[in-house]
Image (cartoon, rainbow, N blue to C red; front, side):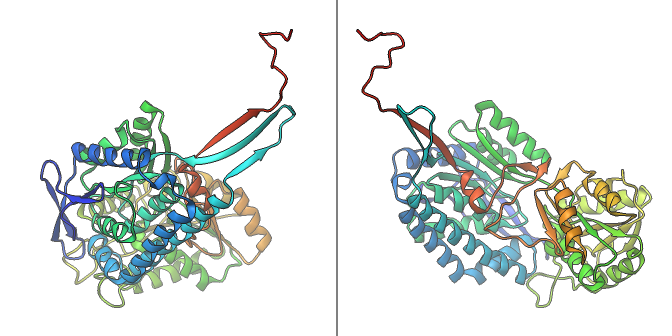
Length: 493
């Protein structure tokens, strides 16, 4: 557990010497005091990243050379995956198998973008066909510059890799600000990058509170690109800060994703994917399918099975073998989710299962998997992102009714549909107003495919080649190739 910030390839104490408590959500114990960076530290990090971009070797290296460092980062992460996963559990609370999977995905992300870095060498420019024969034109792609990344607490190291890996592959330098709730593995990434041979200043990591470190980063004039994953209100503030300097910005924000289950679906498969779609990572997933729409004829039987299976999920410390649902990340998040449950009940919704602290778990931010029914379409629990293990289940009449309810949201991150009728699945998938759609499943995420949403769920796409494009500028270079004078102002003799 690191006690210093990572700036310009060195471990440095915060300018004001502050720290903040890191709390294990399963025990409520303080396990570490992390360094609390402030505006002074952010400025030092940005200056280091600026020099590394303007004067350092990283942007000038070939894609193949950058790829070698990215692959080395991937290898070190895999070699340390159990230690890193344990840090994630202590920091975030998620079950150990989930944490191991996250770390493996993190390593895979760096390896994937190593491959795309090499492809930049294979396609350094694109020739553009012109209608004017005296001119030739080509397009080149260049790194955008210094990127600032602010990441959430639900997938600490994995979300860092979604931004760091493509930025480094493109030749950018970066200042990374992790959530103050989960800073541990982000700081470890600094040590891993150093071991992998990343030049000083290319990656800088400043931990600290949002107002004291995140806001100065989003407002810093030395940043060329801002990338943020988190809540809609904070995303709006990031976007406003970026507007002042006309910074390039990408936002991956919240969701209230629907899961439409038609009556011809296999009920056991449907229940399994519904459970996975909302209770994985304690429901603290931006794409969680927290609004389940079930065709009326299947609704009673499916609801009964869902309630029964949700009650069987083993809840406990993420370090304990067999745990499938850990604690929420913090007391603040726990209180927000409990308040949402109480509001749902006050508005007339029925708690069909869960909704309480589990028996025997008096310490830690634990909550039973919670299933709501009978909620109105304009109710808080149906409309708003709760970001916890809470799912709303509602019947629908026909396909048109399901699509209407699914799309009736200010969010548009993800959606899912289940049916044995493949044509219907494809039809409904096209009708969803969402950036990510799953057919007969929920939540599978692949580094190769684009990730992002419609409406208030964000701007831009991460992952795949789209994630690399976030950190590249497109430059047109056009040449006049004729020996004849242009002759617009100065006429030929």
